[in-house]
Length: 194
Image (cartoon, rainbow, N blue to C red; front, side):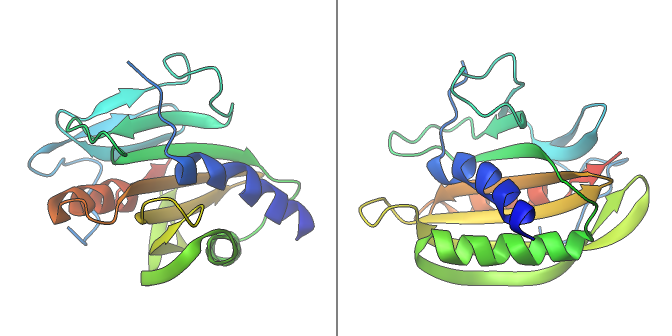
């Protein structure tokens, strides 16, 4: 369990910092993009992202980005304080753990990391991993990394495949437009591991 928390510590700061330095409530099917979205995929995963949003792969990202970042996606409507974004992280595990256990540990880590922590919604979420449904959690909270930071909202879903865990994590300012949060939710909930 100690190693599990170390893995969590590696993945969370990226989303919490919102450092992206590159130039509906139902889960949509990856085979049929919903209106206004398209399928983004790699050899490891796929998900739906809004048309017009920017994507950056590790080659496009700043050198100070963690090496476990597979992709970063950000809103095309810039905010000078913080631009809504999503990242997909891949972390190695020392041993296989059930996805639901990892998701619960991720939730606890967020509770202990964020100031002004408030849960908006935490609900069971099944995620496809190699075509098979696994139990996880959709975690939707708000808080601040530092007491002086602007209040942000965070969404996360985790999926374990063997000794790897994929975390799709979204962040936006708490006063962001509600339609942006709906788009973030669609991205996070559409995530599937190949």
